[in-house]
Picture: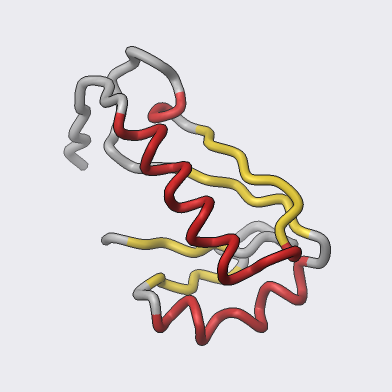
Length: 93
């Protein structure tokens, strides 16, 4: 597998924050906290240009109720993706 790394981009923080604001409009109070993790969260580090986010939620089962809405915004719904108690949404291919 070929991995593409990019030089650090200051826009990655803005992209994360923009997505946080967007997701707040969907999930409202279901999300307790948003975390930006992975290589794009580390200033000056080369990274795969993928914004990794983790959301801490009140009730993981309630997140499934948003699947249709997330699909309408072109997110892939990956469910637990091999980790019990997790919900994975992917966007952008």
